[in-house]
Length: 605
Image (cartoon, rainbow, N blue to C red; front, side):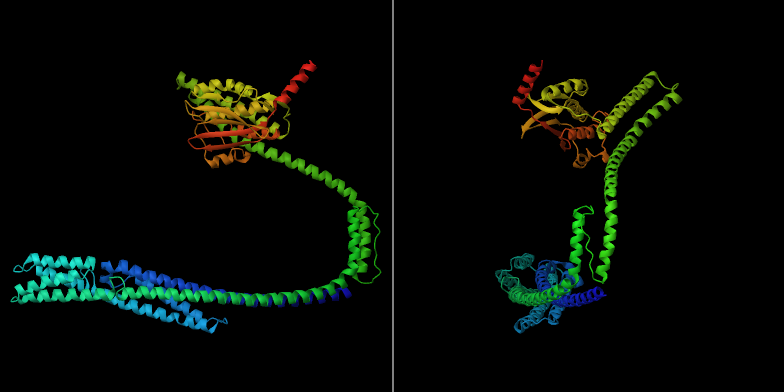
């Protein structure tokens, strides 16, 4: 019963310690989150104020010359700006409601942000009212001024040239915002008034024209079309001052944040070290009481395991009457029985492991083989079946040329089936390690030349040139059948996917005791997705050549398998429209080694 009491006490202690640790961590996390949200809120407020300044300038650039703004008296930019300002006020209110112990001066600085927001709204309100009053083109005061100008132009008794001159000085002022055009405008207008002083209609029209023009000039000064003038200038200066003020607050906040984090770190480390020390003391006391009898049992079990249950390790039986003492007696009986059966089980397990490994290998071979057979035999047999049915059912209605063509297609299909069957059998033989690899010293150029001669007729049918750039007397270590098989497959594939009048080159390069053989064509090339699937048995690729030549799609897979058995490998790089380069490597046989082999052969003869 003593062990149960000790375990319960230790469990209860660690629950209390874990709970205390959790509370401390939760408090620290809450403080950190509060600090994070405070600074995130301020940064969000600063960003919105910057966006608000940018929207104000955007409004002045685009909406003041947008007729729809004066018609509807609404603006999407102003609506967006309004929402942004409201959101900024909410951020400011959230900053005021924080529960952090922020420095009083810093909080006073944050309070002042509202003044900047209010002042910006005040300036923007005055600016939009002045812009709306001034108008643009046919709207507002500018529209009224133009109506008076059109009224003057329609009066027959007035001097139209001077009226047009008034319009010119008006437009020049609008474009250049230069006061010299105001003086010129006034001078022409006064001359017209002097000449037509007895015409009340003309005089009233000229006075109205002048009043509206002068009011627009004053509104332009109020709005601030010139640099450092009017509400526009005030808005820009206020924006710059606001940004400077927020930047200073940001520096203060960074300092405050560092202090907050520093305080939290001190609390965290103090709590952590205190709990670790207290936990270690209590844990040491509990562990000493609990583990002393268990150490003896553990030592005994380790010794038994190291000796593979050979029965030579003495069994320790404790004299205590608690659960540990009873456990040692049960262990003694169990170990004795386990020692008797362990050797038998180990032998059986070894045999089962070897059998399982062999079964998995054969099962993989079977799956690969059946997948190839199911995919590649179905197509040719269906073609053969269709051609034979055509000959059986419609032979009388076919001409001799059509019959000969069908027979030729049947013959080609049978040839393809024969090649496919041979490749499948070769594949199965390779997978079951039935291929006997025998490494010999071979002349690489001769092997390439023999393969080119074998495939020359097929290449000539497509007017494809086969070029051998392998230097003479280049010796490699390879299995003769494997080398010729790989060369035959790579060169025939290159011919298959080359255009007429194309070239297929075979070259070599020596590096680090190896000979890298490259088969290069300038044919159709491949996309990277197709290149990645070339050598995967589960995704076997078979496609027609440039003259619709058919293939089994197994040649490259077999080549890779055979090269692996020769401790080699194959790779490919290709580009659509430029051709492909297939590269494999073989061990280089130095000339000294070849000379020694020749001497040995001469001595044997």
